[in-house]
Image (cartoon, rainbow, N blue to C red; front, side):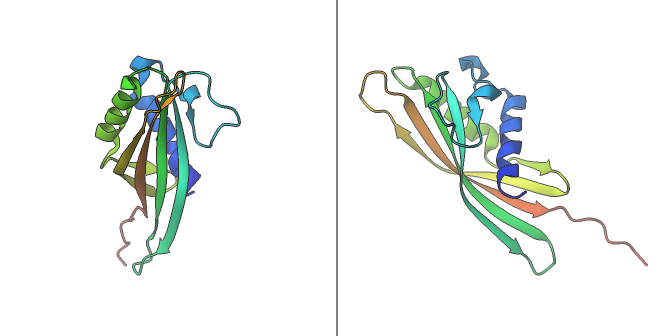
Length: 145
């Protein structure tokens, strides 16, 4: 649950927030794994899992850290759509927390962005954002006996 569950929840959240909707981005264009073929509809986003760290903390709370990339593709000549979507994600996602079933809390942190604008005609423009998600089990109130 600490790996692709986080990315699936992030994908769902992006659809609810309408990230990139002004550029025609829909959930059909947001992939949790690399698609088998290059997406033909632009803009597109790939959520790519890089690392998963699971841990058991001394207080018996389960948690972990998920490192992933958000790769945004677009085909505008100047790359403005991918930069705008990346800025929107940066502002909305950095520091946000939400719940995951059954009893986990996830907090996101944006780390870095890399622009890849090749000077080749008809080459897609790309922004890669490196992110971390901190997953913790929600504490339940202790029963008094």
